Image (cartoon, rainbow, N blue to C red):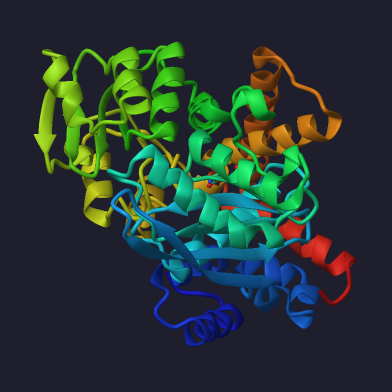
Length: 447
Ligand code: GLU
């Protein structure tokens, strides 16, 4: 992808100032790749150096997280919180606990989050955090002690009007609960709105657990509708087997589609009859086991150790595992096998080469910052409920989520059209997300 001349200079500067952060560079380049027509139309963005400002986080926090494992050994991890942009509201974005986490991953996620959160239409800025802590195989006690130590530093940077974390890979309701408890002990405040993704009993929102998967499925459904299609009878691949993947499966099934494969870092499960939702929930949510266990218990399924899920023929692909999981070659395979729509439940799951293949092929392609915005949008609904000291019903909350996803889709379609690339939702999402943030920054003077 070649960038507009001024944008190329900005991009080179980002590379120079942030050495070794490949994923951050990739995320920046993808957004700048859409902004050529925007800077041409709005010269004030260049003269006010809005893009350079957006590429520089407002604040970056890196800290030591010491904790003791079950054998009494001292462990040390690194904690991060990148408070990227607060033009639209308090910093908002999840925490990722995974051994691959380093500053470049958190910055890519935080950068994406700015535009994603803007697209939701809710008053939330962008941020992200996490740690290189590996929760795999850790006991409940170890998870709790790690979360408490993590929050013992992070609490001073948070607040319902300041910065509101939630979950991401490796962080779910259990971890959020431990962190909330520690925040409350230190501050002596029951400040429900300081974290989202809480369990219902401590001020969480209905539908938050389901929101990213449901939202992504709603988004793909909107895309399909533009071509007089639906999920009815479609074979769907959903990579991953975490929270996003499981609730994508649930909603796809409700809409008449069939999820024939899922995966984890060890391999792929395939079942031509459709993956059994209750069994996968039992194995992943209750027992917290690997996906291979599914194949042991379900005779109609096959386990493909180290298999590539994208080799399986499908109508719709919904990558819901992690960044860069669909390469250029995978994208070619999907298109060749007849895939007509891709909706990204994960953040930046498709490499730039893969994105190019989807756009060239003219299939429906919903980039993560639009398609997976339902999670953070429902977090914003949780903040609303906390502020009102209220709790909405499941149906009401889901209705709002669906409306938000429709709105995001429409916004992206319009922006893509207005700026000369109809149907290109990558441009649509980047432009629409950027415009709101840029205007909010201009309105606040030099920030
Ligand atoms: N981690 C999720 C995301 O990537 C959710 C963030 C949130 O709810 O704050 O958008």
